[in-house]
Image 1 (cartoon, rainbow, N blue to C red):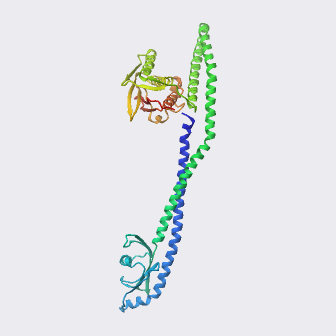
Image 2: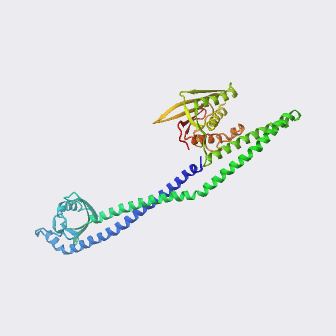
Image 3: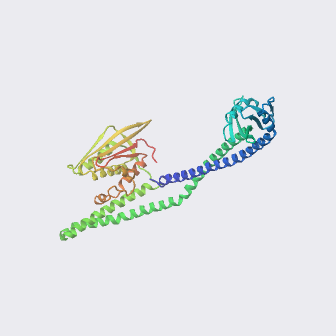
Length: 439
């Protein structure tokens, strides 16, 4: 994969974390501001209706006493449209004595609610009503209990229309939410930019590391080739003169040199694949013929008593691809299947798949080998990852093959999936688009 592809998930993750923390801070800020503003507004209005209740209680104490002594007078309720607060004086039985009102059309609803709350101990409460125009009205009510020498005379209810205050608070919420959303989007883009800027040194470090691996691998190939050739010459000319121990030592040196050459080749392949300017030598080729050619080569070399390699094509497919890299990918998957299948079948299947107006080649490589545990599925394509490290070393495994294969598939805009369980074999599903349009 390219450096940009490697770091993009990290960049997005950093931006997501930053944006999430920012949104949480904005939500906390909105609740705090709303709580503080509403507390200030409601506290002032509560004090106002409480003062009005105290004043009206003193003014109408005589009226309550007369009413209690059966000296009833005509109920007097004045309409005060220019006042924001109103009051009602009620007897202990809930009968209205007097009052000033600002919302006469809501009198019956207000009084009905007040009579229902006569026995409640709560002093302050809110009433949510609907006026004749079907508009919501919010009222703040304060109840004062009036006693005369421990005798309950009645109640003084004072209230205030706080609909405008409620609307103001609702508008404040919407404004704060809108501003928070706006600044969250702006800061998210800024965070994405800053995350990219912060990752520049990491990109440079990865590029230097890639260049070092490529240079080192390239420089090591020649001396390793010379070393292996020298060992073969020594074996050919001097083997009969060597002791048994020396011959075994020579064989071990050849195996290790071959293994090192293989590792260096894999590292060079990965370094080239990681390069930003990686290009493919695209050409149209019959995928059927390409797979058949690779399978024939293996059928001549594998131990037929242990492995049975077969290829079944359910469609003829032409694909635009880099033939050399696809061949390398097939070798990796087949080598892997042979290596981890002590004895059994290895089946390669090719199918055509249509998605919309595009054609894809779907290839499966199935073996009857030892399988891969579910816990290892997520890491099987990681570099240098080996499920059984001890077994991989004895079989010259490096942990780079599947990573290289996936890189080749990604370069061709394809996908690879895995289906495997321990003791039940492994199936790799490879999907490649047949048309051009690669990076």
